[in-house]
Image (tube, rainbow, N blue to C red; front, side, top):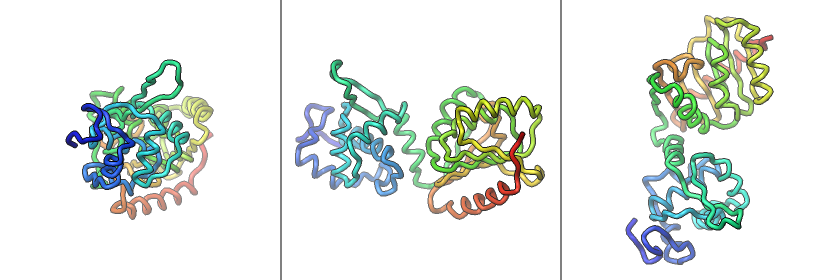
Length: 277
């Protein structure tokens, strides 16, 4: 956006200027995710930080009180104290700055990881392909996977015929699932070794549930389902990052019927499965 009367210098907007408030209320913002489809208050906060930076040209960190005011102008109600908690949990999706060393109040700006998170989560097509070529195993496990996992919420169901200790390293990124349910069938590892790892994992992530499906020949596909998304995995989940593979990320109304069909199948198989000992 070109420099307007309410810009203080080249990179700061006067949030209380009535001309700015009018522009913010009326802004169409076609290149940003649709405001009406924002799923969480944290997404709304990130969205506003992004809009202020890239649409209004505000390149200075802002306080939660200022952000609450801007969201209110767009008809989004989030309390200042709630914003503080949400932004503290946003990790590397935002940058934090303390202007006054004697104060505990932080100011916030969106980081590129936050922009990438919103772009991926609110992709217009509802279908995304993520290629994992196996040449960056550390990055894929510790950057790519957490970014994907952050986009899932509520109950998370994972299906893969094969399991092992490497599976738990991947499931760790989805431990916020409430619950996180893993349905599997076979392993090439000793049952005792996996059981020990599973016990340790569940001490830190008690929402994890694991069941073994008795007919391994019936489990073919590998996928992850959440409330709003489905991820189809092209290779063994425990091998993500170590071998060439792909992830197909499906979300939105156009894929809801497929998600519902797979979830019904998951629930049926889950009821027929047993807890490993």
